[in-house]
Length: 326
Image (cartoon, rainbow, N blue to C red; front, side, top):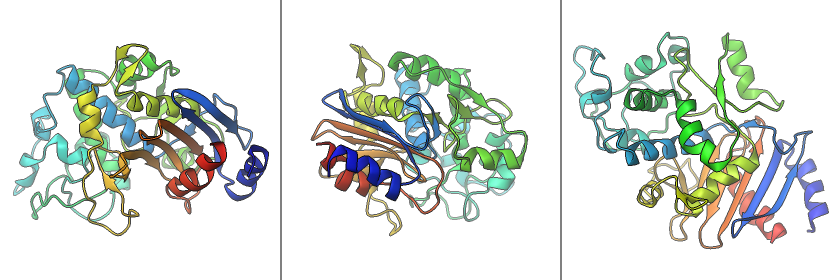
């Protein structure tokens, strides 16, 4: 199909897509917007936020602010009171959080208990551990990943968004972001499911710590910059923003023992789409994606407003978008 038919197809068959931006060999070869979005408008990119957080952790490690992924989580929270009888939490390391292999008590994400608490980091730590010990089992969580923002703050003294602005967004020419605070549970929900364009914001808790599992708002053009940085081995305009070693470690595939994730592997908060080809992606609910293909030197970014029946849009990118754009 030609580009005009493609754009009509999007409007009719992929109705929650807001923006698409495709880069080839570092040059933009396609960009378009739908649903009255402008190029610079932002969308809540859902769980693709996690992948941006992985870059921030890597930067903090490179700068010596965090020792390594093997640092124990509780080493950053010496004031945390471990619950009686709890032992597992003492052995949980940063690596377990990054690979979604940290153990938690209970099933599912404890949204209500964490998001209604005064201190989201402490509330998340209260769920970390358990009687089973560290099994190494893949255990995908979102709200309890807030521990990573707590670690970043304890290690750097900077709120998540400030660290991102200084060490990642600023160098890439991405507009400065600010914290977004929800005054009520209803406003929190509306932030997630609202269809309207967002500002350059990052959802944050009462302490100003950005949620690392969701909550970041970006445009497709800026998401494509994130992907291009990774494709260029961490270098932007001649400056090393993220170390090549971290990117290699971050995208090393680790098997996911589950039938629910389309057979993909997992790195450090990035999905490894085709381990043999080195293709990886930041994937958020409703079809928000940063798709990186080193083999073809291509980056594709898609933003979308909330639609619960859409998961990852990887097939759309590989089977429709890229063949059409060429």
